Every structure is written in structure tokens, then in C-alpha cells.
Image 1 (cartoon, rainbow, N blue to C red):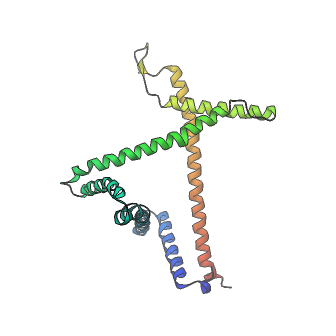
Image 2 (spheres, one colour):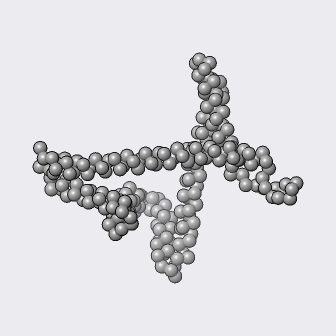
Image 3 (cartoon, helix red, strand yellow):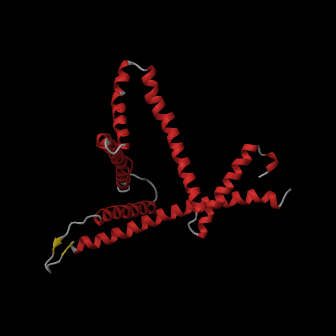
Length: 233
């Protein structure tokens, strides 16, 4: 980082980034006011950025502009979101909070429908089709490659089925008088637990790798910030 070539704005941004990095690294010494200030700044900036995106991508083009220059049909259609928005704003007042329950229920229902449809169309159905394609026998190639594909399909199918059984909690009275799941279901669910543990381990490894990459990037930033000061060229 050559400070002589930096503008005043770039230099100020580098200094702010350096100070915030040190404030975040101060958590190594334990929870402290500097770390909390940095976290609050991050949350505030994220909230402000989300608000700006909502205004310029949703409120302004899809609400304000149609009300000002839209057709009569467009203005009539906007009455529904305007009414729901007004009801939602009433949640601010404790006395009028009950009026906003309808808007809140609509938001929760729409969000749940979006999540469920995304899980079905984006995860469950593609995974099921991919698993079935491993057993259709249409892939050409050496016999060893076909056996490997078949083995992969068996492992994926076993992991899917045992994981589903793992979340089956139906229990029945057994001959010994104790209410529990059948021995077969219990054994299969244990195998599903192994697959779940492997999946969670892979997710944790990905999160840890991302965090480590961010740490390395911040360390490189500090080195590049101090380097020209300590070893000027």
C-alpha cells in the first residue's frame, strides 16, 4: 500500500478499516467495549444497506413510481400492499398492535410458502432426481466407472433414507412394557445419525474455512498497512 498514491478518501477508508479490524481482534482479550462498538457499527451499516436496497429496488420502483405515473389498474392493485403496510406500521403502537396481526400473518405465510417451495424445487426434487439418475443405467463408460457410480448412488440413497428415519419419533409399547421405537427403526436411525454428523462436520469445515480465509485477508490488510511505515521504499 503506497500512501503517497492514495487520495484523502482512500486513506481515510484504510484507516477506518484498520481501526475496525483491531477493534474486532480485541475480542481475543475477551468481551470489551471496543468489540461491541465494532459489532454495533457492522449491524448498523448492514441495516442501513438493507434499507437502501429496499427503497431503491422495491419501494421506489414498485410503489412510488406506479402511484405517481401508473395506470388506474396499477394504482388499484397497489391498494392491497398499502393497506398491509399501514396495518404493519400499527404494530409500533401497543394499543393498535392487534390490527397488524393480519399483515404479520400474511408475511409469515408468504415467507413459509417461499421457503417450502424453495426447499422442494431447489433441493428435494433435484436431489431425488439426481439419486435416481445414478441407477438408471444410461451412463456409458468402463465397468469400473459404472460400479463407482452405482456405489455412490447406494451411499446417497442410504444416507437419504436413514436420515429420514432418524427424524421418525413414533414409539409403541414393547413386550417389556417400555414405550420406544422398534429395534430395526432404532438401528437405522443410528446409521442416519452418522450421516447427519458427517454432513454437519462438512458444513462446519466450510464455515471454518470461510472464517479462516477472512482472518487471513484481515492479517494481510494489517501487514500491507504497516509494511510501508516500517519498511519504506
